[in-house]
Length: 68
Image (cartoon, rainbow, N blue to C red; front, side):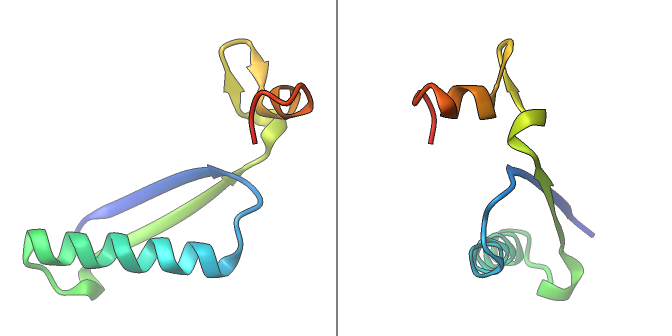
């Protein structure tokens, strides 16, 4: 049973997560020839202040206009 963990910076809508989940599930089901109900997908929302790129947080980089 495949388990997929997707970590993203918080702020994505439920609709976006639903679409990502559908596409990942479809791809794994097709490639691995598994029923879609055998694939587990978990989203982890991480606060921008807790996600670092180098020594700066994403929140800091966004304030500087370096990230969206």
